[in-house]
Each structure stands twice: as C-alpha cells, then as structure tokens.
Image 1 (cartoon, rainbow, N blue to C red):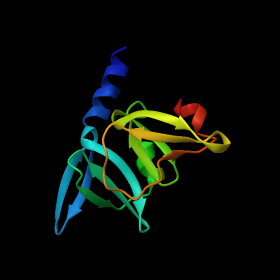
Image 2: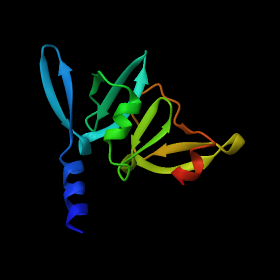
Image 3: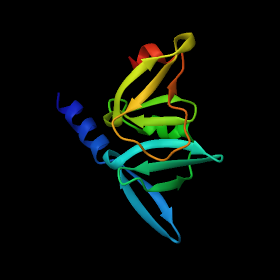
Image 4: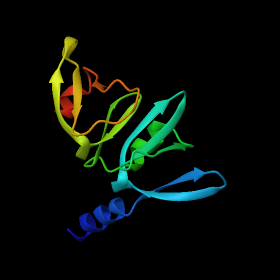
Length: 120
C-alpha cells in the first residue's frame, strides 16, 4: 500500500519543462489541459489557455502521464480527464468528446472506434 502512495505522489509532482524564449519554465501536470499536434509540433495548453511547444513526441509524453488523469483520444491529442464533460456516439463506433469549457484549438476531438471501449 505504501508503494501505491509513493507512485501517486510522484505523478502528482510531475512537471514538464517548456521553453519560452531563452528561458525554461516548469508546468505542473495538474495544470495541463491538453497535449496536441499542430503544424507538426507537439504543444501543450495549460489551464490558463497558454500554449507551449514541446520537444517530445506524443508517444513519449503519453508514457510519462498518469493514465488516471489523461487519455489519448487519437493520434493528435491527449486530454486531461477533468475537462471532459461527456461524449456522443457518431458513425462507425467513434465518439466525439464534449468539454466542460471551450478553447481555441483547431482539433477534431474524436475517439477512434478502437479506443472508444477503453475511453468509456
């Protein structure tokens, strides 16, 4: 039981390093709403709707994130579960995600047919 508490604490204290000009900032995992690919760059958007470019692939990022807090809905996007308010079934067994707030991203928030059962 103590091992689980330590793992959870480590995940909660996890941070991502982002570059802003010649400075590096630390963004806490719990402050991140979404990781996404835009114009071939992986970016994160925090809860203040600030965007940062990352020097890592979504695959690498996904492995570092606590699966209890984040879900990779498709090849372009990993969402923080806190911002998901629901989902709607669409064609071919896919799902479209509904968020509890809106942000200015040019993303298709759909869950693939293959990932839909795990998402539900």
